[in-house]
Amino acid sequence: MKKRFGYIISLAAALVVFSACSSSNNSSDSSSSTTSEEKVLKVGSTGQSYPNGYKENDKLVGFDVEVLETIAKDLGYKVEWTTTDFSGLMAQLESGKLDTVANAVAMTDERKETYNFADPYSYYGAQIVTSTKNTDINSLDDLKGKTVAGVLGSNNLKNLQAYDKNGDITIRTYETRDGALQDAVNNRVDGYINSRPILAAEIKKSNLALKYVGDPIAYESVSFPFAKTEVGSKLAKEFSTEIKKLRESGKLKELSEKYFGEDITEETK
Image 1 (cartoon, rainbow, N blue to C red):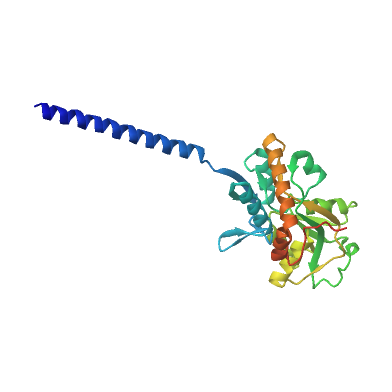
Image 2 (tube, rainbow, N blue to C red):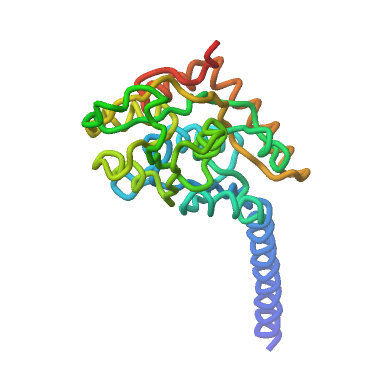
């Protein structure tokens, strides 16, 4: 009887030790999951902006996309992408649904009042193109009385409105680049305005029958916009530091040449 009682005591002690070890392990696991939370960056792109951000085999790729993802990785962020039209992206940024937008966002004075921008990572000229069939359109003056397409909410459209002070040009707005571009290619509009490096890449990629009309009507710096909050200010500073590193290492130039066939990361003097 004594032996049996001693066995029961030993078994109970063993169960207590096992339970304590199990409890300790569970506590350790819980602590690990709590401390290993991922930092998430919510970023927007149209997904239709070649070569800045577009879909290739259902994957979002492009110059702005790769610059953003390189910076986010170096800063330890996981990126969550949202794709919609450009005006929708900017609205989501203002409402706090997005942390930033990677879609050739021009750093205008007006936008600087609303957003914290990181330092510029690329530079563009606002260029108008027309169909090669339009032999009567060769200069900007030739656009008087003509219709020019632009993307709703884009700074290129605002540049066109600022240029056309007398209202000589009829401006037609589109939700996406593709719609405006195709109408220009098919001569349903007399011209289309976009950033010159983007137009050059699109024309080369698809052998489009388009030609430049004069010189760019404006030049602009491009970067990532953030909210005018403490968090937005912190992110803008972090991104500025990483952009500087990418420029100094030559990586920024490398990505530009990969997607545009030229270096658009240095300001035109």
